[in-house]
Length: 291
Ligand SMILES: CC(C)(COP(=O)(O)OP(=O)(O)OC[C@H]1O[C@@H](n2cnc3c(N)ncnc32)[C@H](O[C@H]2O[C@H](COP(=O)(O)OP(=O)(O)OP(=O)(O)O)[C@@H](O)[C@H]2O)[C@@H]1O)[C@@H](O)C(=O)NCCC(=O)NCCS
Ligand SMILES: Nc1ncnc2[nH]cnc12
Image (cartoon, rainbow, N blue to C red; front, side, top):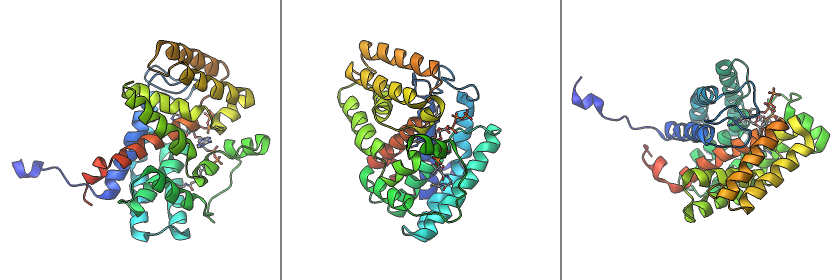
Protein backbone atom coordinates (compact mmCIF):
# COMPACT_ATOMS: atom_id res chain seq x y z
CA UNK A 1 0.00 0.00 0.00
CA UNK A 2 1.24 3.51 -0.84
CA UNK A 3 2.25 5.50 2.22
CA UNK A 4 -0.24 8.24 1.33
CA UNK A 5 -3.10 5.79 1.82
CA UNK A 6 -2.10 5.43 5.47
CA UNK A 7 -2.99 9.04 6.30
CA UNK A 8 -5.51 9.30 9.13
CA UNK A 9 -9.02 10.08 7.92
CA UNK A 10 -10.33 13.37 9.29
CA UNK A 11 -13.38 12.62 11.35
CA UNK A 12 -16.57 14.62 11.04
CA UNK A 13 -17.92 16.37 14.14
CA UNK A 14 -20.69 13.76 14.39
CA UNK A 15 -18.18 10.90 14.22
CA UNK A 16 -15.96 12.54 16.82
CA UNK A 17 -18.88 13.06 19.20
CA UNK A 18 -19.95 9.43 18.75
CA UNK A 19 -16.37 8.38 19.54
CA UNK A 20 -16.40 10.47 22.71
CA UNK A 21 -19.77 9.12 23.84
CA UNK A 22 -18.64 5.51 23.34
CA UNK A 23 -15.29 6.26 25.05
CA UNK A 24 -17.20 7.65 28.05
CA UNK A 25 -19.30 4.47 28.29
CA UNK A 26 -16.24 2.23 28.09
CA UNK A 27 -14.32 4.33 30.64
CA UNK A 28 -17.31 4.12 33.00
CA UNK A 29 -17.57 0.34 32.59
CA UNK A 30 -13.83 -0.18 33.14
CA UNK A 31 -13.58 2.05 36.22
CA UNK A 32 -13.01 -0.15 39.31
CA UNK A 33 -13.92 -0.77 42.10
CA UNK A 34 -17.45 0.64 41.58
CA UNK A 35 -19.96 -0.33 44.26
CA UNK A 36 -22.32 -3.13 43.10
CA UNK A 37 -21.78 -2.24 39.42
CA UNK A 38 -20.14 -4.18 36.62
CA UNK A 39 -16.42 -3.41 36.50
CA UNK A 40 -13.06 -5.09 35.91
CA UNK A 41 -13.51 -7.13 39.10
CA UNK A 42 -16.87 -8.68 38.30
CA UNK A 43 -20.60 -8.30 37.83
CA UNK A 44 -21.55 -6.50 41.05
CA UNK A 45 -25.24 -7.00 41.85
CA UNK A 46 -25.99 -8.26 38.32
CA UNK A 47 -26.49 -11.83 37.13
CA UNK A 48 -27.11 -10.98 33.46
CA UNK A 49 -24.34 -8.41 32.85
CA UNK A 50 -20.56 -8.60 32.47
CA UNK A 51 -17.80 -6.30 31.31
CA UNK A 52 -17.59 -7.74 27.79
CA UNK A 53 -21.32 -7.16 27.34
CA UNK A 54 -21.02 -3.55 28.54
CA UNK A 55 -18.24 -2.95 26.01
CA UNK A 56 -20.17 -4.60 23.18
CA UNK A 57 -23.25 -2.58 24.07
CA UNK A 58 -21.26 0.69 24.10
CA UNK A 59 -19.79 -0.03 20.66
CA UNK A 60 -23.21 -0.95 19.25
CA UNK A 61 -24.44 2.53 20.16
CA UNK A 62 -21.87 4.40 18.04
CA UNK A 63 -24.16 4.71 14.96
CA UNK A 64 -27.04 6.05 17.08
CA UNK A 65 -24.85 8.74 18.66
CA UNK A 66 -23.47 9.72 15.26
CA UNK A 67 -26.97 9.95 13.78
CA UNK A 68 -28.20 12.06 16.70
CA UNK A 69 -25.33 14.49 16.16
CA UNK A 70 -26.03 14.60 12.42
CA UNK A 71 -29.72 15.29 13.06
CA UNK A 72 -28.78 18.18 15.36
CA UNK A 73 -26.38 19.64 12.79
CA UNK A 74 -28.96 19.32 10.01
CA UNK A 75 -31.97 20.66 11.94
CA UNK A 76 -29.85 23.28 13.66
CA UNK A 77 -32.09 24.37 16.55
CA UNK A 78 -33.82 23.11 19.69
CA UNK A 79 -37.43 22.27 18.83
CA UNK A 80 -39.90 19.47 18.32
CA UNK A 81 -38.44 18.29 14.97
CA UNK A 82 -35.05 17.65 16.60
CA UNK A 83 -36.60 16.17 19.77
CA UNK A 84 -38.63 13.71 17.73
CA UNK A 85 -35.73 12.90 15.41
CA UNK A 86 -33.44 11.96 18.29
CA UNK A 87 -36.28 10.11 20.02
CA UNK A 88 -36.65 7.87 16.98
CA UNK A 89 -32.87 7.37 16.70
CA UNK A 90 -32.72 6.66 20.45
CA UNK A 91 -35.38 3.96 20.15
CA UNK A 92 -33.49 2.41 17.22
CA UNK A 93 -30.34 2.59 19.36
CA UNK A 94 -32.15 0.71 22.13
CA UNK A 95 -33.04 -2.01 19.59
CA UNK A 96 -29.39 -2.23 18.48
CA UNK A 97 -28.36 -2.50 22.15
CA UNK A 98 -30.91 -5.25 22.86
CA UNK A 99 -29.90 -7.17 19.72
CA UNK A 100 -26.26 -7.05 20.85
CA UNK A 101 -26.99 -8.04 24.46
CA UNK A 102 -29.68 -10.61 23.63
CA UNK A 103 -32.34 -8.58 25.40
CA UNK A 104 -30.44 -7.30 28.45
CA UNK A 105 -30.85 -3.60 29.31
CA UNK A 106 -27.27 -2.38 29.57
CA UNK A 107 -27.47 1.29 28.62
CA UNK A 108 -31.08 2.55 28.33
CA UNK A 109 -30.45 5.48 30.64
CA UNK A 110 -27.12 6.24 28.96
CA UNK A 111 -28.68 6.42 25.50
CA UNK A 112 -31.08 9.00 26.90
CA UNK A 113 -28.50 11.14 28.74
CA UNK A 114 -25.62 10.92 26.27
CA UNK A 115 -27.96 11.19 23.27
CA UNK A 116 -29.31 14.49 24.54
CA UNK A 117 -25.81 15.77 25.36
CA UNK A 118 -24.34 14.70 22.00
CA UNK A 119 -27.15 16.54 20.21
CA UNK A 120 -26.65 19.58 22.45
CA UNK A 121 -22.93 19.80 21.61
CA UNK A 122 -23.56 19.26 17.89
CA UNK A 123 -26.02 22.17 17.87
CA UNK A 124 -23.42 24.66 19.11
CA UNK A 125 -19.95 23.09 19.29
CA UNK A 126 -18.30 26.39 20.17
CA UNK A 127 -20.44 26.72 23.32
CA UNK A 128 -18.81 23.80 25.11
CA UNK A 129 -18.98 24.75 28.80
CA UNK A 130 -20.65 21.86 30.63
CA UNK A 131 -23.41 24.07 32.05
CA UNK A 132 -24.31 25.49 28.63
CA UNK A 133 -24.37 22.06 26.98
CA UNK A 134 -26.48 20.62 29.82
CA UNK A 135 -28.99 23.47 29.56
CA UNK A 136 -29.41 22.96 25.79
CA UNK A 137 -29.92 19.23 26.48
CA UNK A 138 -32.52 20.14 29.13
CA UNK A 139 -34.45 22.29 26.65
CA UNK A 140 -34.61 19.27 24.35
CA UNK A 141 -35.66 16.94 27.17
CA UNK A 142 -38.50 19.28 28.14
CA UNK A 143 -40.14 18.84 24.74
CA UNK A 144 -42.72 16.08 24.53
CA UNK A 145 -41.98 13.49 21.83
CA UNK A 146 -45.44 12.65 20.42
CA UNK A 147 -44.24 9.30 19.10
CA UNK A 148 -42.58 8.02 22.31
CA UNK A 149 -44.30 4.88 23.60
CA UNK A 150 -45.19 5.00 27.31
CA UNK A 151 -44.30 1.52 28.57
CA UNK A 152 -44.69 0.61 32.24
CA UNK A 153 -40.89 0.78 32.60
CA UNK A 154 -39.11 0.16 35.89
CA UNK A 155 -38.74 3.95 36.11
CA UNK A 156 -42.50 4.45 35.59
CA UNK A 157 -43.31 1.86 38.28
CA UNK A 158 -40.94 3.54 40.72
CA UNK A 159 -42.50 6.93 39.90
CA UNK A 160 -45.92 5.54 40.86
CA UNK A 161 -44.65 3.90 44.04
CA UNK A 162 -42.22 6.51 45.41
CA UNK A 163 -42.81 9.66 43.35
CA UNK A 164 -39.24 9.60 42.01
CA UNK A 165 -39.11 10.98 38.46
CA UNK A 166 -35.70 9.57 37.59
CA UNK A 167 -33.88 9.94 34.30
CA UNK A 168 -36.43 12.18 32.60
CA UNK A 169 -36.42 14.78 35.40
CA UNK A 170 -32.64 14.68 35.78
CA UNK A 171 -32.31 15.67 32.12
CA UNK A 172 -35.09 18.26 32.25
CA UNK A 173 -33.35 19.97 35.18
CA UNK A 174 -30.08 20.20 33.22
CA UNK A 175 -28.29 17.20 34.77
CA UNK A 176 -27.67 18.71 38.24
CA UNK A 177 -26.10 15.45 39.46
CA UNK A 178 -23.42 15.96 36.80
CA UNK A 179 -22.93 19.72 36.71
CA UNK A 180 -23.34 20.43 40.43
CA UNK A 181 -21.86 17.28 41.97
CA UNK A 182 -19.84 15.00 39.70
CA UNK A 183 -17.84 17.52 37.69
CA UNK A 184 -16.89 19.69 40.72
CA UNK A 185 -15.87 16.55 42.65
CA UNK A 186 -13.86 15.23 39.67
CA UNK A 187 -11.94 18.52 39.46
CA UNK A 188 -11.49 18.76 43.22
CA UNK A 189 -10.09 15.21 43.55
CA UNK A 190 -7.81 15.75 40.55
CA UNK A 191 -6.55 19.03 42.04
CA UNK A 192 -5.82 17.22 45.31
CA UNK A 193 -3.58 14.83 43.35
CA UNK A 194 -5.73 11.78 44.00
CA UNK A 195 -5.09 10.27 40.57
CA UNK A 196 -7.51 9.95 37.66
CA UNK A 197 -9.17 6.66 38.62
CA UNK A 198 -9.78 7.79 42.21
CA UNK A 199 -11.08 11.15 40.98
CA UNK A 200 -13.58 9.33 38.72
CA UNK A 201 -14.66 7.06 41.58
CA UNK A 202 -15.16 10.13 43.77
CA UNK A 203 -17.27 11.71 41.00
CA UNK A 204 -19.44 8.58 40.91
CA UNK A 205 -19.81 8.69 44.69
CA UNK A 206 -20.77 12.37 44.55
CA UNK A 207 -23.61 11.45 42.18
CA UNK A 208 -24.68 8.60 44.47
CA UNK A 209 -24.92 10.82 47.56
CA UNK A 210 -28.03 12.53 46.24
CA UNK A 211 -29.52 10.76 43.20
CA UNK A 212 -33.00 9.19 43.23
CA UNK A 213 -31.69 6.26 41.16
CA UNK A 214 -34.77 4.42 39.88
CA UNK A 215 -32.67 1.32 39.25
CA UNK A 216 -31.84 1.12 42.98
CA UNK A 217 -35.42 2.00 44.01
CA UNK A 218 -36.87 -0.67 41.74
CA UNK A 219 -34.53 -3.38 43.03
CA UNK A 220 -34.17 -2.43 46.71
CA UNK A 221 -36.72 0.24 47.61
CA UNK A 222 -36.07 3.16 49.92
CA UNK A 223 -33.75 1.11 52.13
CA UNK A 224 -31.50 0.53 49.12
CA UNK A 225 -31.58 4.20 48.16
CA UNK A 226 -30.70 5.38 51.68
CA UNK A 227 -27.91 2.82 51.92
CA UNK A 228 -26.47 4.07 48.61
CA UNK A 229 -26.73 7.77 49.46
CA UNK A 230 -25.42 7.54 53.04
CA UNK A 231 -22.69 5.04 52.14
CA UNK A 232 -21.41 7.18 49.28
CA UNK A 233 -21.32 10.24 51.56
CA UNK A 234 -19.42 8.21 54.18
CA UNK A 235 -16.71 7.31 51.65
CA UNK A 236 -16.25 10.94 50.65
CA UNK A 237 -16.30 12.09 54.29
CA UNK A 238 -13.58 9.53 55.11
CA UNK A 239 -11.20 11.03 52.56
CA UNK A 240 -12.54 9.58 49.31
CA UNK A 241 -11.33 6.71 47.16
CA UNK A 242 -7.67 7.66 47.42
CA UNK A 243 -7.53 7.25 51.21
CA UNK A 244 -7.28 4.02 53.18
CA UNK A 245 -10.30 4.90 55.33
CA UNK A 246 -12.31 5.83 52.23
CA UNK A 247 -11.36 2.56 50.53
CA UNK A 248 -12.57 0.62 53.56
CA UNK A 249 -15.90 2.44 53.45
CA UNK A 250 -16.12 1.83 49.70
CA UNK A 251 -15.63 -1.90 50.24
CA UNK A 252 -18.37 -1.89 52.91
CA UNK A 253 -20.73 -0.03 50.57
CA UNK A 254 -20.06 -2.54 47.80
CA UNK A 255 -20.94 -5.44 50.13
CA UNK A 256 -24.06 -3.70 51.52
CA UNK A 257 -25.45 -2.84 48.08
CA UNK A 258 -24.78 -6.33 46.71
CA UNK A 259 -26.55 -7.83 49.75
CA UNK A 260 -29.57 -5.63 48.95
CA UNK A 261 -29.37 -6.42 45.20
CA UNK A 262 -29.15 -2.65 44.68
CA UNK A 263 -27.31 -1.59 41.54
CA UNK A 264 -26.78 2.15 40.97
CA UNK A 265 -27.14 1.87 37.17
CA UNK A 266 -28.54 5.40 36.85
CA UNK A 267 -25.55 6.83 38.71
CA UNK A 268 -23.23 4.88 36.38
CA UNK A 269 -24.92 6.41 33.34
CA UNK A 270 -24.50 9.87 34.81
CA UNK A 271 -20.81 9.21 35.45
CA UNK A 272 -20.49 8.48 31.71
CA UNK A 273 -22.27 11.79 31.05
CA UNK A 274 -19.80 13.52 33.39
CA UNK A 275 -16.77 12.00 31.61
CA UNK A 276 -18.23 13.02 28.24
CA UNK A 277 -18.82 16.63 29.35
CA UNK A 278 -15.37 16.79 30.92
CA UNK A 279 -13.77 15.85 27.58
CA UNK A 280 -16.02 18.27 25.68
CA UNK A 281 -15.21 21.09 28.08
CA UNK A 282 -11.47 20.46 27.71
CA UNK A 283 -11.95 21.16 23.99
CA UNK A 284 -8.99 19.14 22.71
CA UNK A 285 -10.95 16.17 21.47
CA UNK A 286 -13.57 17.80 19.32
CA UNK A 287 -11.04 20.24 17.96
CA UNK A 288 -9.04 17.32 16.55
CA UNK A 289 -11.98 16.69 14.20
CA UNK A 290 -13.07 18.45 11.07
CA UNK A 291 -14.83 21.52 12.38
C1 LIG B 1 -37.02 8.95 29.42
C2 LIG B 1 -36.36 7.59 29.51
C3 LIG B 1 -35.11 7.76 30.27
C4 LIG B 1 -37.28 6.54 30.11
O1 LIG B 1 -37.26 6.67 31.43
P1 LIG B 1 -38.03 5.73 32.45
O2 LIG B 1 -37.72 6.23 33.81
O3 LIG B 1 -39.44 5.58 32.06
O4 LIG B 1 -37.39 4.35 32.12
P2 LIG B 1 -36.46 3.21 32.50
O5 LIG B 1 -36.61 2.16 31.49
O6 LIG B 1 -36.63 2.77 33.90
O7 LIG B 1 -35.03 3.82 32.24
C5 LIG B 1 -34.42 4.86 32.91
C6 LIG B 1 -32.97 4.49 33.04
O8 LIG B 1 -32.24 5.66 33.35
C7 LIG B 1 -31.24 5.35 34.33
N1 LIG B 1 -31.60 6.09 35.57
C8 LIG B 1 -32.23 5.66 36.68
N2 LIG B 1 -32.42 6.64 37.56
C9 LIG B 1 -31.87 7.73 37.00
C10 LIG B 1 -31.75 9.07 37.45
N3 LIG B 1 -32.27 9.48 38.61
N4 LIG B 1 -31.14 9.94 36.64
C11 LIG B 1 -30.61 9.55 35.45
N5 LIG B 1 -30.68 8.26 34.98
C12 LIG B 1 -31.32 7.38 35.74
C13 LIG B 1 -31.29 3.86 34.55
O9 LIG B 1 -30.41 3.25 33.60
C14 LIG B 1 -29.43 2.35 34.12
O10 LIG B 1 -30.08 1.28 34.74
C15 LIG B 1 -30.34 0.34 33.72
C16 LIG B 1 -30.85 -0.90 34.29
O11 LIG B 1 -32.14 -0.58 34.77
P3 LIG B 1 -33.33 -1.58 34.75
O12 LIG B 1 -33.89 -1.77 33.39
O13 LIG B 1 -34.30 -1.13 35.81
O14 LIG B 1 -32.60 -2.91 35.07
P4 LIG B 1 -32.46 -4.03 36.11
O15 LIG B 1 -33.02 -3.67 37.46
O16 LIG B 1 -31.07 -4.53 36.07
O17 LIG B 1 -33.42 -5.05 35.40
P5 LIG B 1 -33.71 -6.53 35.63
O18 LIG B 1 -32.38 -7.22 35.70
O19 LIG B 1 -34.52 -6.57 36.90
O20 LIG B 1 -34.52 -6.90 34.41
C17 LIG B 1 -29.08 0.28 32.96
O21 LIG B 1 -29.35 -0.04 31.65
C18 LIG B 1 -28.58 1.72 33.07
O22 LIG B 1 -28.67 2.38 31.82
C19 LIG B 1 -32.71 3.51 34.22
O23 LIG B 1 -32.89 2.20 33.83
C20 LIG B 1 -35.85 7.17 28.05
O24 LIG B 1 -35.24 5.92 28.20
C21 LIG B 1 -36.79 7.16 26.89
O25 LIG B 1 -37.84 7.76 26.81
N6 LIG B 1 -36.37 6.49 25.88
C22 LIG B 1 -37.07 6.43 24.61
C23 LIG B 1 -36.18 6.91 23.46
C24 LIG B 1 -35.85 8.38 23.48
O26 LIG B 1 -36.65 9.29 23.45
N7 LIG B 1 -34.59 8.65 23.49
C25 LIG B 1 -34.14 9.98 23.44
C26 LIG B 1 -32.92 9.99 22.70
S1 LIG B 1 -31.82 11.05 23.39
N1 LIG C 1 -21.15 -0.47 35.06
C1 LIG C 1 -22.47 -0.73 35.11
N2 LIG C 1 -22.95 -1.77 35.84
C2 LIG C 1 -24.28 -2.02 35.87
N3 LIG C 1 -25.20 -1.30 35.24
C3 LIG C 1 -24.78 -0.26 34.50
N4 LIG C 1 -25.47 0.63 33.75
C4 LIG C 1 -24.57 1.46 33.20
N5 LIG C 1 -23.30 1.14 33.57
C5 LIG C 1 -23.41 0.07 34.40
